[in-house]
Image (cartoon, rainbow, N blue to C red; front, side, top):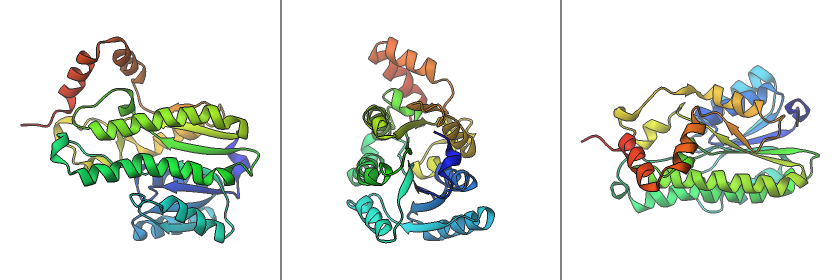
Amino acid sequence: MQLSTYRGDWALVTGASSGIGREFALALAAAGMNLVLVARRKDRLDEIAAELTGRHGVESRVVVADLARAGAPADIKALLSSEGRRIRLLCNNAAFGRWGRFENTSAAVYQDMVQVNITALVATCHTFLPDLRTFPSSVIINVASAAAYQPVPYMAVYAATKAFVASFSQALYGEWKDYGVLVQTLVPGPTETEFDVVAGAYPTVVIKRVPAAQVVRDSLARLSAEDPVALSARGTLAQRFFAGLFPPRIVIREVAKRFRPPD
């Protein structure tokens, strides 16, 4: 798979208004792809769309949507189909989390988290497969997290959603490669985005972050190898070794030490 052959085709990026999503939009536009930008903040999307067109001369289509709403992926697909736009590269980046004790966040927030991080991602893959199969090759990039590799006390629901994304995406890679659809699981580590602010991270656990642009470069660099997983997180081999070799009691205890809220 060579991204240069996708010039002039359409890519769809969710969570495109900032962070990793924004950087994906910039990188794909630089490669000559037209962009469908999906997020909730229209002003941000309009700014990015204008930047993409001005810098790279590509087309941009802004779609304001809340993926916490059931049916949003189907509505996006119906809109784009009515305009004659077919998606060749799909980037499922939209997600959010919450730091802190499980009981201190409302059940409604967790319901939205599961809807955005899991349900909408699955629905988007399913909904856009007919588009993806019309091309000789196509790509899905599902953004997981290094948090997928073990339970994370005090980020219990978020880590569980990313474990789902990692497992689901790798299984889909095995199913859809025969269709010419490459499903890549992108595993970022701590990244310079708005995630920590939105999630309510406490300063005691905020460590060095890498630029979001680096995460995107790591992802796109692995497309030509057609690997099921693109690692951008550092130290995941030791992390997976620890989680797989040591008893769960020890793994949970040690991870909890790092993520426990301050007194």
